[in-house]
Length: 476
Image (tube, rainbow, N blue to C red; front, side, top):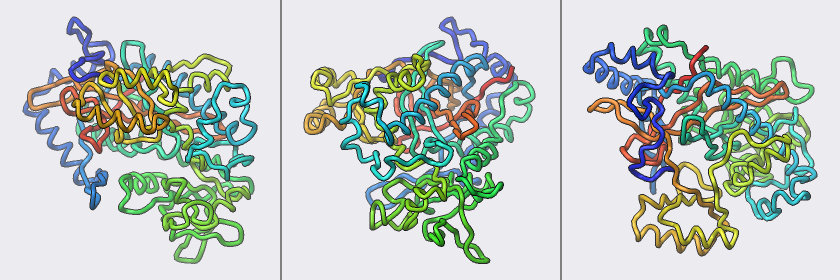
């Protein structure tokens, strides 16, 4: 995170005002367009998103409110050489995460070695004892991973967090590209950009490759959604449609003859791979939360018998834990034998007494996050918080220090957005999407760029006023 008002590294312009090489083709095209035409295109993009139904739900005190995803039509552009370096670091991290998951649920060598304290998962709700000793089909735990990156300089990319449970946002990446190609077809003939449109096909192939032993050559893949009131329901339906997979709710599935089967117009049909967008707690009322109406009674028995693949594997949420994140450099080195190519943001673990003292003494300068928090909720951004907010957060931190980590405020990079006064810089992050199967790791070029639309704002989450933009990786 950056302090409010800190400009950060400008990805489009060098300090002398010249346009960086990656943006030159786009800048040349932009200079040929009239301001009035661009303004009309901006409104056209909003209308396109509204007609397509690209929305998300924000949960308030009473009901969920449906909102339009704000879209900015100025692309975020990454050179092919930058992307090659990034890809190596992303692949290394995802391979390490998968190996870490296997180890945590088997011999726990990393804990025996003293590299990782046992307390990090002993009382961790995301660690599932039901997964101990079990290896998912194909040995894959993290079928789909989102790695959140921030940039602080020309060659400085840092990992902000790992999303290995149920990473979302890929539908917005795809719709952003489709919108841009529909609005500016001539731009894509001028600037060569690597395609992302085949992601659903790659996802379908990757999931099918993870089918359990004994599944047919063309296994049945289904997307399990909590239903239409879920904040990411648009994405669940979109991906199922694009993959040619079935979109199902828990009530559509039942365990029959040792298999998970889905209701069809001609009876029940086995499901071999379930891409679930339902949290672990609600997956199986016989194993986890008995009140859950979202999951499938008995699915964990079928899973442990090796008769269905669940993506991502139950228990992978441990990797989303921000205290575990702070050990990722050690985790990467332990499982790959190499130094991490992508560094973490410096992190203070508030469970440690010395770290807690430092954080309490510097609250006004730091970003403090809940270990299990997500979506920009439950966090303190010191430089933009009032004395009253800091005092209230201090009390929470002192009451339960192990629930928090803290990070410095970083000067995040900026990309231009289109405003009524022309282009203006705003802070961004990037979530590349990574597929993992027994055949290897597949990284879609680019990912979802989230942008803080308010001047000086640090929070890019759409639920808190952020937007998205198309991410371009240039083609050589």
